[in-house]
Image (spheres, rainbow, N blue to C red):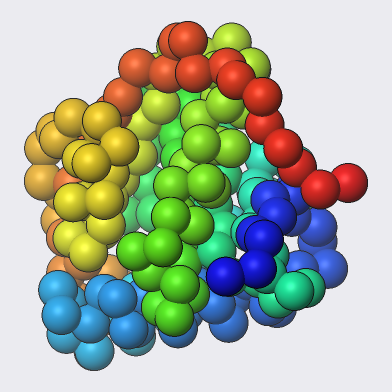
Length: 183
């Protein structure tokens, strides 16, 4: 495989990111959620809050100029928080957000590289812990990275579909290492 480079995402990446994210959710999430639930989630919640790009806290992994994975973090409340009173009332924290891998690159270490970039950025911003809401398809991946599982959460979408996730968290103190990002 050619070298994968990690860089901050740009606002101009939005369309390519949404295409990758939706495809990833459909393919990798398919065995865990029905297609109607996935389409409802995409329609009512979406795969990424635009502010992730605007805040400069979102990363992409590229191979030969094509985005093959993405993910980042935020201090802001996620868009899905409006669906769950517990999430809406939670104090702001460093939340890992919208981690997706092109299905053709799944299980090749690209997701780990995106997570390393996000965790290093969280630690550099002064947080000692990262939280996330894992899809059922991503929970095993996050556990392998040291995230501890928390409560299962059911997000009821406006059309009645239920999207189940698992709260997870991990200490990130001490993860500051050299991060190689392309300029």
